[in-house]
Image (cartoon, rainbow, N blue to C red; front, side, top):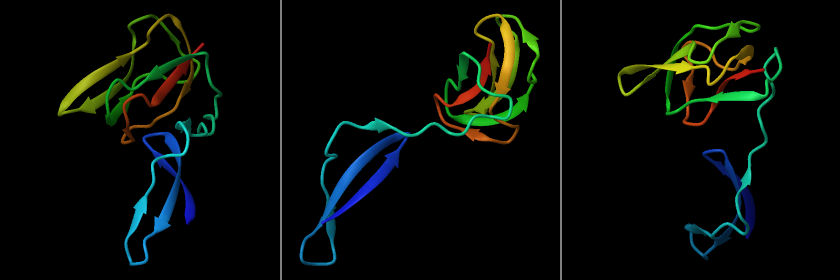
Length: 118
């Protein structure tokens, strides 16, 4: 038997694989509840208290805000292309941009942190 740690959509699973005499192997169910993957390193500007997450998977077309910029609720932070449509990702509340964690051309998954505000 061999033990592996597998990450699927940000969830980490400990999996035991047992060989069945032949060339095929079958994976057992996870031994325990999934645990969260370790967070990625913080951006150069640091992290803010308010996270702005991707509402859906897509590609970043452009970044409209910069670190240190004061924003009001509803101000456009970046443009996310999803399903051939351009979607504005806006500030959820007034604040200052602490970090922009993506760049134009990046592909993102739903829920990924795009920016943080203070």
